[in-house]
Image (cartoon, rainbow, N blue to C red):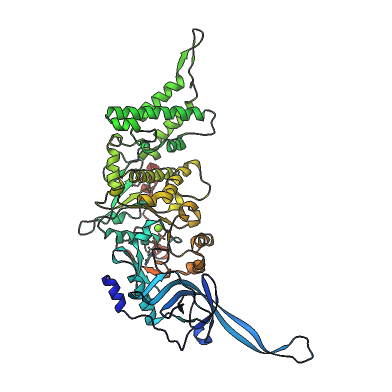
Length: 588
Ligand SMILES: Nc1ncnc2c1ncn2[C@@H]1O[C@H](COP(=O)(O)OP(=O)(O)OP(=O)(O)O)[C@@H](O)[C@H]1O
Ligand SMILES: [Mg+2]
């Protein structure tokens, strides 16, 4: 028996007064129970969302649920036949106060060797006439501390406190939260970024955390800044903007050769063109031969035997253009003495020009104008160590300067490469890692998916479906869950839901919830900033939690419009430099 179980044993159990219940059960469904209030006074003092305990099958067992509906039912009684009218005339009206409880868990005063235990799910059903009580006061405190002690100490992720009882800590099972993907959703300003920072902070206290944050607004850079003690919570990178020329200072390039054939073609090929099949074929053929050349030069005999066109092996873009131009202009001997155009003559012209345009496009410089250091064979080893190493296990990658049309491709390639590296690691040597997908609706859209977006979606959907087995999971963060790929969301086992006002978004959450909890969605618009309901197997009871504020705040402060309009003038100079930054497409 662990020390924590002993502690539970010693704590007092829940105590209910059999003489004054809140009500008695009269209708029992698979997931909810209807009860009739015994005292009309008492039921008016109980609010929706209150926890209710109900007698179970055994004297030691109580089913715990949440009050989710109260109605008053009037019945006409004491009929009197006056002989004149056909219908009997009622003499009195009886009001019955009825309420519904959704069952969530089972509390036992004695469970084998243990005392006072709580588990998720109703193990049995109450009997008709079972008594029930609201769980308030000291009973509530007891139950809440019981909930925390049900999570093993080494798995505990402290999220905050319960709204129902601020003295009790809300604890999630950290293993379960990350094991099978989680989603963190809430309207803008509801506290998602703070919640992410809180989770990262908690993870940073572990020995070897491994999380990669895809930071879309550069909000999490304060986490990578050294504190007074000289240490930082995370390591920060920034995907190169058009003015970055080298990898110095945490600038990250994602060279074109990391893209697989499909990703490259999605970026460069116009499938509506007649010559598209020829273009794709030549392109693929040349990339294969150029990758072979790299391997031969590097004397990688093993890789030479097994590489494919999709293998991330550096090759030279200018040589690729030369090969394609040769095809496009080649003349071959004809049947007469005069040479005639080769098999691809003129068929690749438009493809080459599209490729050259992309190569020159400053917005894609992180991919096509990466410095020479990125074309070294060993460069990818360095990236793998930087991103998946656990020396400083929380990695924040700032994508804020990546143009929005390129974002899905870049993010998709990045996540896929990390996943592939994990996939190919020896199973016993893998450290599990989580990709935190901030603003997921931007690159994991649910509708109007273009061929390019589809590649990114494919990468993430693959992680969502298969990642668990290889120790890769996603934490999807979004203010518009209804705009996020259904495939990805439906794979999430845990939802941290903050205030959610939009109807469509709430319906999405409702769809992924277990049936008996759908009533909870009604309370989502009413949550305060920083309040959340956690649904899933990581938490024992889905009740309101007030999340702790993180120590290091993300750079996401809500601006005080009215006060600032009264206190801060704008600087004309900063506006000029903003215009220049816009022209350069870079803030630095
Ligand atoms: N747990 C919390 N406790 C107290 N205040 C909070 C908490 N979480 C958030 N806030 C307040 O709400 C503000 C907005 O929070 P945050 O930036 O996390 O919102 P968000 O959901 O990420 O919004 P967006 O979708 O626009 O990115 C914070 O600046 C902070 O003032
Ligand atoms: Mg945010």
